[in-house]
Length: 405
Image 1: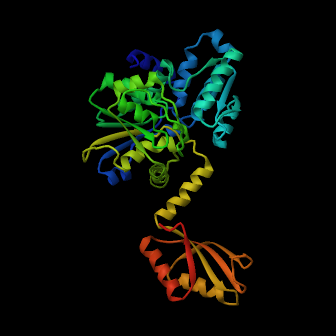
Image 2: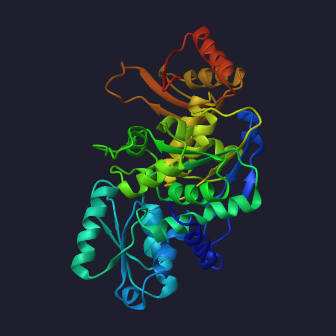
Image 3: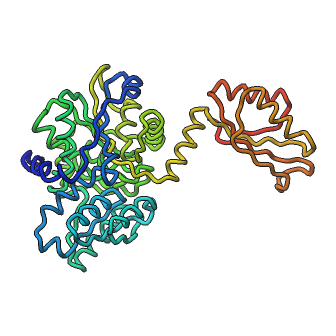
């Protein structure tokens, strides 16, 4: 594990640079799961994620000569912004290699900090391979996002802040991508309060670290696919795995549906915008992916908030449908005066609010004289939606549903 002295030194180096993010109890989440849940809100960090801590600590540890030549990193976004921000503080050039599918928000946020961005590869690992070759060719110092002692020590400062504010923690739940955050947090916790149970959480679509943890040897994935792009790491770093095996009690996984539900919960109930990788800890708690006693104190890190707006919109849309708060219908009417009014009157009778409507009489799938009306309705739950269906059946409307759950 990383020596305690290295983590405390990083803390002293960082305390005037990074934001000491809020660490607060989440009452509604606590009530839902029957435990006292605390959230470390690194999604509110200066760059929107904890990665600034490790990046700055690493660049600060370089010699003046190394810094003057510039730095390079490979990242899906959050590490990129951490390196770019830190490089700007030191007044040195930064080059960032990002996967081609990186959300536009993260690309723009990185370039706005003054870094040069090159898009390359389908995932982090392909971007990483290109970045290491680019670093050699151009004489740049590579800032690894997780497999570096100085970076890990910087990430471990999150734990210092948490334990200074809350001494009693039974379970500490931490997202895992490459493993830098949990390696740093785990190293500090094991040396300061070894009684805390540390749970790592991966995305089911990027399971390499979970498989490696349980087999105690590096097992890379053949591919990764998850909405948690910030932790979509295909290959396992033996360095981080060794630390994780030493300091972590268990590693669990959550699927994209569970991650999406956690993002929506945090947005609606906690008023927090959190990206997929940052929400996996809450997903693991909500869906009871590990055993905890009633009334236990659980802390988790919301590691980032840099979610793509289009992805957030999709999660909200699907979440409303799954919660029976929205339904989509296609109703086929006889195309004549008053037909549409009869439909809207029927919906009004059961209190269904029309929030979107489209009228189509030209589709080749329609019989002559018919029209399709596509509707999006705001509803009040499962029973209300059944009332809508029964009303349409009673009115002899021909209809079908999109995405019925």
